[in-house]
Image (cartoon, rainbow, N blue to C red):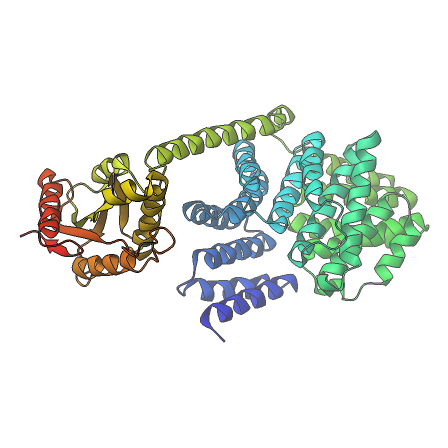
Length: 516
């Protein structure tokens, strides 16, 4: 197995350990992996997995630190799919730490990154699900619904999404079900329909895998039980392919909550109380206060049915406490500004990109697409006194081409020569149309870089570019090259290359002369 494939396999094995509820083993496996040289993408993935495992163990500070590290790496290496994911997760984690303003800043970063066309469906849905849950917890269901509906439009009418999107679809369905009770009217109905559609897509697909299908069954059973449909909810739970006891605690809690709601609907309050207690404890351990509040509220109904009114009132008070975290006054107003602020960031970025595009186009020759004199000036400003080799090239007897075949043919010859030069130059070389039929190549002078050998390849490339279609009299096209080496910003360097070029012309053309 190749090293990269082996590293990915180890990461997936650690992920499986976490899903099986063994967070400590997952963390240890990730630590071993992080001690090795990894690509940035794999390191970001490993940090996000360790963050999730740390969160399972209640280490929210450690979880946030890993997500911040992953986010920094993803930003530095311009990996928008991981920026979107890490930002959304960091937003939710910052909220767990009571840092509302920071959570909103991360949410804006996630929304902006998710607009990048390189972000795939899986990552867009994952970010949207995390943000939907975030704003539901913040008490801003309208913002949550807007984010989730936008993500759902990305899924569209497809009946079989890319397989990598299934986990994200499960999370999206959960987030939609979570926000549904806080909505009303058509918005609530849309959320319920979209959550159902997300779950059904996963459940019906063999490609999703057993664990993913079961997660969707658990989420949907909980949604149906919440909507007062215990019979189809129980049918989904009966169809589970894996044991929820082997799941991560927060995922298993969804099943306990669904079973508790079904038991309550079927007149079994004692069983409902016990199941909802398990769910509330698991949600509390995962820091999911809103889910814990819902489980406690249901448990209060079970306590009331058992005639234990003091316990019911205690559960209701605790549920209210969990659903109203302190220090969040004005959060809904702030949350409503998220889209506006994200749009402002996108507009600024668009203007910056447009300015860069304009600047780049101003540095290009419109006929050949090569750099022009402005590109040369920018290059000198950027590299300063860096030692380089200049190869100044001039087409031999080009005036006769224009005279004999016309300027359209002359332009076609210039474009073909440009393609030959650009295709022969090395990745770090810069090819510039110096003016008329002159071209300048800025090349490195490191040991083994060989400006003389490069010049020879350029001569051969132009001579063999196939000229019979443009120059049917068989004359072909050649060029002469003058080479000079020295600091890029030395004004004498171009003059030296120019003198060497004309020495090549005087010596008979189609040759190379290097300045003394």
